[in-house]
Image (cartoon, rainbow, N blue to C red; front, side):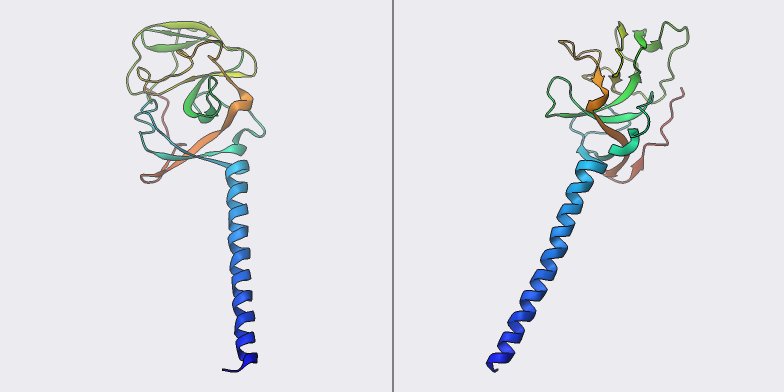
Length: 190
């Protein structure tokens, strides 16, 4: 093999390496963009949302869900835990800004209404009574679907009972492990 052929092969290897380097760099930048601006990829460490979301489930939340409108009642959201913002929590939106939430005989009532919220998605009715809780403007009242084991707005202390709108990172849209499950099909009726 002569020197010019060796030089040619060396240049081709450098071009190939640069080509792969560009692809890998683009993929990394794209993944960082998706993870920081479009989706939240989270693992569920507790049973507070059972049977809707189980321990060890891997879920994806869409960050742009609330770009034009705020969270709605029964949305499952990923948010920064009010007492320690380094932790991500997954709960269901129950109380909206300006509402009063009360739990009596295991049922959730809004604004003193006579008819409780539908709760066909919860694991078991909670034991005990809570409230009334007045949800301040710009904040939300969260409950887990496994109410008796969930650390949620009923149990948080030191004025952190509500989640600020700015701390809600996205609406959970699907589970991808173990197996695919979308959350648009969750029933809210008894």
